[in-house]
Image (cartoon, rainbow over all chains, first blue to last red):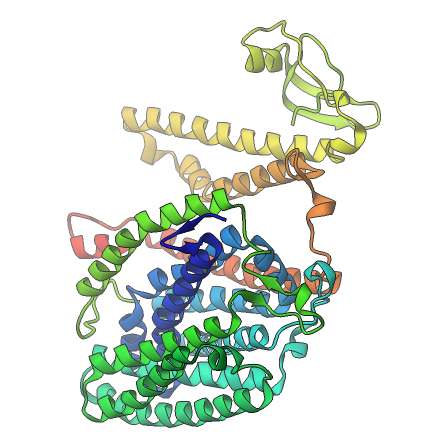
Length: 345
Length: 195
């Protein structure tokens, strides 16, 4: 098997996919989070400011999901096929809400009528909430594993078969983490009374997050068998949960000091460390079979040919600096508080 | 796409027509030898027909593919024609006096969208029974895990969502047309907003 820097190609691609999904969670985290606070703002002007805070950024952020899923398809086609077939309905609902959310951003402020804006506001809020919720459901189901039989085949159910207690807990954690992230981001973008209201809302969001985070962690440790095996095997990996915990604890501390930019970095790090925990626990498995470990989808039996992986890794090496440069430029350009003008949503 | 079943020389190109899948014949307005010319730059050249392929390796709906393809081409030609005619009138300075033509233009906003869709139908239906031509057949390609109920559910879901978005599209296009062009010279800000 070919390797680069002593790491084999499938593992490198696993890192690439992980990085893309972390980027997606962090960036879209504050987008969806901002959207989930939408109905908590009462005035139309506040709602417009909140939408325009993410206005120039959300479509660029959304591309991370597309390249993430694309990277999964290109690098681990078997995983792509198994995951999307097994969770067909949740993914279709996710797609629908993504379409509705984008439409709501575009259409909401296009008309003056009260009923028009109110309808789109509700659609916007519901889509953001359910997108975050569904992402949590998908993550929880991947953690729990599927009844994969021979050839990774699995009869996927309708939506409700994915809604077990654990999935709901992980989803609530996702929702609350995004809400925290969104509120911190909006604080950086607003001023005046909206800013004051957001400091109040952020506190509620953080309490919501810490409660659901603690409950989910406890549930994971008690009810998910083998979740700590990897860490007992390699004690050095304990650094990741410790860092995750420190990042979580650091957010309220920085918020109380009103250091919102650094708080945003730490709530982003929280997401990165939590996803890293998931990755470390799963590796090298992508989808665990609850029937027989033989039938699990791993990065080795799901990978494309070594040659394709090699070509794609070269593309990643070239495009990463370009992507990073573009995002730096984008965020620098739209830095600072929102000012509404003719071109705003 | 031309409903060309038997290998023959010369092969004709149809502007309009109807394919009878039973008798494997096409009736319609044709350009004799046109297909031969497009393939070999020779009006007499021989063109392989559908019958050269086994029956299970060619599309079942030849007439449908024929019609979709011809709708796409006709729309394209019509739009080129309209543009050329309008350019001619614009050059003569009488374009904005022809109200009927401007009316046609307002409705031809929809034509490229239709052409796009039927072109897609042509590609997808014409490729059957392959999903990746020569490598993977459609019946081998679809998921064994996803039940037909789930597929139906997602189809209805997106049909509803896209129907709503289509109505919104018509509404906003109509609004833009009624608003009329923005006057660049008078209000540059508003013009920038418009583009």
